[in-house]
Length: 157
Image 1: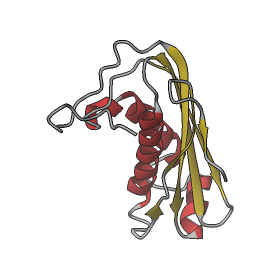
Image 2: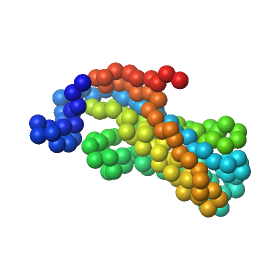
Image 3: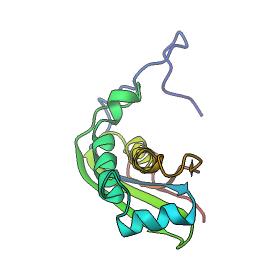
């Protein structure tokens, strides 16, 4: 498999997508934040002093997805057509974050979905760190992608 992110000198480059077809594309990514049961309980009950953790994390995810190309050097800026962020928990000590990002364009939105869940998880950490500093984040992974030349992908769970 040829890596297209390198030029003839072996230097990194932004891939030229000029000749690619515009197609509908989507990607879903997920991550987990592990914490003490009391921290998760306080998040769910809205008892974190900085505010509604999940609402702020959701906004952070949307903002991050829209700005992915600002901090991932070789990403193309994309007109996103949809971003959906979902939260679930295991009832004790894990908060699961999933984001689906959509566009109609010439390149995929995998990085935008991964960035969204990462920003949401970091926001949860930021808002709860006064309560618990040893929270952990991950694994963060792409669950699925649709559209584009490479076709569809779905992780086997």
